[in-house]
Image 1 (cartoon, rainbow, N blue to C red):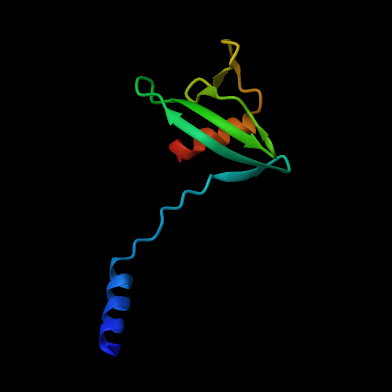
Image 2: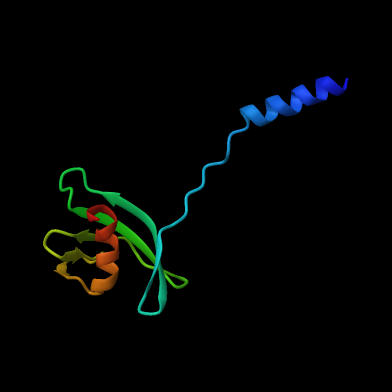
Length: 97
């Protein structure tokens, strides 16, 4: 009986799979914690990323960041320069080293 329990414990340890863990990449920018909640790269334009940030406890709407031309596309549909260059550099640095 004792050997049977040892075998069951051994098999459970051998076949146990750790649960996948995904930690949101976070960085301190201007003394605020900035975390990327969702990030997708454009299939057609590899330098564009759709990013949703969480700044402190505020969830920012999804914006498109053009890392090649240093512009961002807001929800209102207009392109303009990076409104917060430190945060945009954080998003672009994840894929451009």
